[in-house]
Image (cartoon, rainbow, N blue to C red; front, side, top):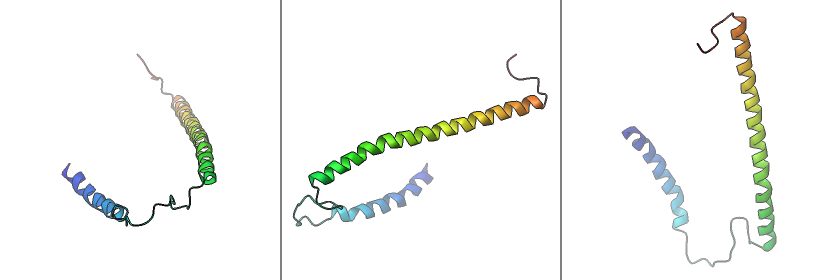
Length: 96
């Protein structure tokens, strides 16, 4: 328990040091609505929304396909292990 706290302490301190410049930003700058990309025009907001709308279904599709392939590999490994076990002559499969 103590080791975890001691291990988390430098990470926490580093995180706070990295976030501090944003907290201490100059409040004298005019608020113009510009972010890191630039001015937030209607076109920029609309295109960002379309990108977000397209991203999530594509992400879900890719993750589902990846899970399907991994499940297929797992089932193939299990079938191969069963065949190997049956070929070795193990008569005690399961149950009583």
